[in-house]
Length: 171
Image (cartoon, rainbow, N blue to C red):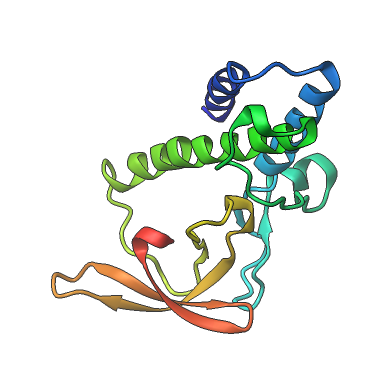
């Protein structure tokens, strides 16, 4: 499903501008780096360890991080220089991919199958508004706050150097 979604979004991006071979290769390499940096599961069961296994661990044996660039998605494509245009395409890809593919994954597990509440010690990815998904921090659940109906909607999370309360919709 991830490959199909990636191809779908790339086709839509390619309608916006034309790339040279080198520009297309650069854009695809950057998108590949971002996709292969997604956290899959915790590396260890140690509650103080906030590192996660990513697809890049299977490919190159270590974590791979893409360098963040300034946001240029609010500019018109025609106004950008060639390298900025590549970054625009990567950022635009991520905006579409994170909205559609990630929400599709949440829909499948959240609405059709009851997965229960989070448990203490679970490693989670925290959504940060205005941040690309690659920069979203990891945290570990330290406490759960159940609601009146018994379902938990808020959790206390330990991140690097701080503890925060987050609703489940931002986890």
